[in-house]
Each structure stands twice: as structure tokens, then as C-alpha cells.
Image (cartoon, rainbow, N blue to C red; front, side, top):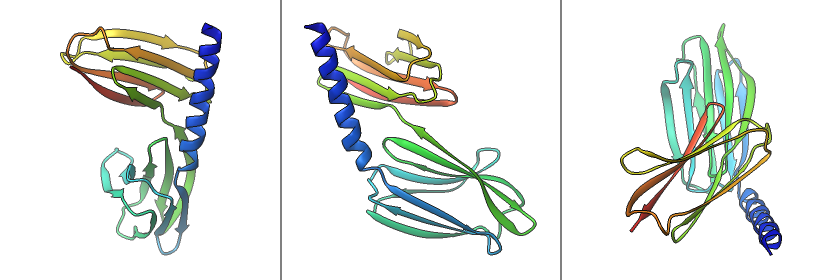
Length: 194
């Protein structure tokens, strides 16, 4: 019976993830080197999509929450000093980061990195965490109470699919934070227990 329940849970997660990924925005980023201009086009944008432009010291130069289903914008970067910059888009299920280089009056896209984000499902006093860890990075899962006391901790290594379920039905009233971190990324889900 437990095996059937586990298989059903995995299949349900994969189905939910497939439907969710189908709603991921389509992204096109073009650099026009001599004009030092970026053109961003997004389709099927959810209200949880953010774009940011940062410098090498992680200072935010530009940030915007995208609310239209179709989005197109031209970024004039002529006034940027020579150096390294990062253009990022973040949606509900993944983040994409482009590294840009401005040098000698030219703009060049150097690299693109995509990172999957963990998927949290909250139902009453239960929180399920699912994460597709394609790089098999070390994953740390922690739960904190509202006084920042650690109430749960688990380290997961060499796993491609990370799943965890938390039952807060027997927990004391208050606010809790479920946190997952891997590499230099960290994400959290907040839950109120009444």
C-alpha cells in the first residue's frame, strides 16, 4: 500500500510539474552590440515574472515585475561603464541569468544559465516540496519557527529528484519557514499554523 501511495505521489508531482512548465514564459533576448542595446521578448508571462539588470557587485540597476501576457522591451545600455553585468528573468518555476560584457563600445552576451526552482504545494497544514535537481547538487532543507529556531534539518546528496512532505497539524501555533538551498541559491515557503 505504501509503495502504491508513493508511486501515485510521484506521478501526481510529475503531472503537476508538466502542466506548470507548459505555462513557463517563452524568452528571447537579443543584443545589438554596436548600439549597446538589449531587446527582450516574453510570451505567456505569469504575474510572478520579474526581470532585473545587475552589475558585477550585485547592485540592481533596473528591476521590473512583468504583468502583461506579451512583453517586449528595448534596453538602452549606452550609459553603462565598461564591465560585467547580469540580466535575469525569474518566474515561478525557473530563473534564467545572462552574463553581459560591455567593453570598447560593444555589448556581448557571454553566457546563459537556467536554474530550476523548487515547487511547493500547501494544503491545509501540509507542505510538500519537490525539486528537480538535474546537477545533483547538495541540497539543504530546513524548517524554522517564528523565533528563527531550527526545528528540522536534512542534507540530501546525489539525488536528482528531491521530495519532502511536512505535516504541521501537530505543530504549535505560529509562523514557520520551510527553506531549501543548493549551490548559491535559496528559496523559502512560509506557512501560518493556527
